[in-house]
Image (cartoon, rainbow, N blue to C red):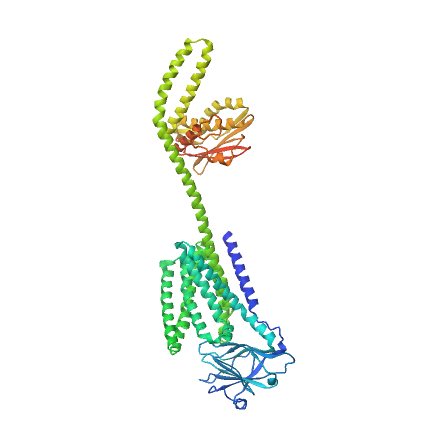
Length: 635
């Protein structure tokens, strides 16, 4: 459900981007529809002669009146020369100018009675023209003629605006700057990402570099598709057309490569195979383009078939393949596939709408929504790569925590090993002379007067305490559990409670035990009691007066959990993290061996122990052992 809402949020953002883009793309015609020329006359000619006079043009046969929204009249077979005629109305003030929003042709001339006032001759295959033409006052009320020669699309589409040159120029630039802003922003992002790729690890290079190529190619496509660029700097048109084709040929395999590295290779590595095919075909088209350019477009028709018709079919197969594989991964719960599918759906819907309208208009339509769909798609890809990096960062943090935990465990193991070796080599040697000394002191106690007995008794107590410490050393050094039997947790705590209740009462505390009858574990009874007596004694000593110690247990997920919670003084984080370390104790006369032995006993019995504590509130110890079923059945 959480992933579903994330997907809805991403879809909403992408749709809003596309909608805002559409609003930005709507042409600004606020300068008045009364200055719009909405109809003109057209005719066809067998040859294109830019030097024809107005009289010769007027005498051409077949002039037909056309409205701005009408389709271009059908040209006679083999004729690709059109002449357009319309009258310039009176303009009251300012410098008049004409704005042709969309005019299709490779060679365009504009004539008046005074001769040629504009000419654009393109040697490259890009027919869309946007023309802003300042006029002389002398042409007002007269007709002007627009001659168009083209090898494919031809004609005047949309309305022709008449207005003040300054205002028209502002509108002209404003309506065409969007493509440059989008394209330059994408190129800038790609360059920054390429610089950042120098600092990435090898496992991220493939997806990151593919995304950089996708964004860079998309930016170049958006800029080089704009007619504004060809109108301002038309002499570099061949370069723009070549850049458009190169970007498209780089975009498609990079797109598949990014999908492969982020989403997956697909069934029987079909994505990988298709990506290799695309790389090969793109290289073939690049070589074909180079040959066509060197031969001055002698092979243009063949190159057009390879780079438009065949490449279009390859793109359709690519999109179907990627969305199918993405859907499969999405069904399997892959969140990155969900994000990819959302971005692709936005791109595909906008593209489908435009392509349908493109063919409805008989190709007399310039696509513009596709670039906003592409931007939305790129955003979804950036979200995917960002999500991947966030996940990698989280993994690094998790690995760091685990490494720190393993390092602490290793240090603890090394300390335990040192203590074990020390205890094993020293404890027996020290215990023997202690026992001999104790025996002689006992003989002296029996023979001495009462005044000396006090000191001798104190010496015996200290010897017993030293012997207990040595016993703890031996227990730690050789932590054999001994005879393992089936232990009833409640019965064991009944004995422990009988031993420790008097001590708790003496401190002013109270012990309460709530343990079910049917909890069983495997272990050694005496070692079990020793471990929990050490834990509960620490809780009693932490009370410092009145307080309560609660003991309860239960079985969950195949484990018996035993909780010991007191209302004592508690511990801070630093002390809590060092519990169980050799020689560490927060008691004045403590050695730290008691809790260390407790940890070792629980470890040998396949148990786990953990502590939670808060200063001034109390401490809770949680011990877990593997649960077993009572072999004798319910008691």
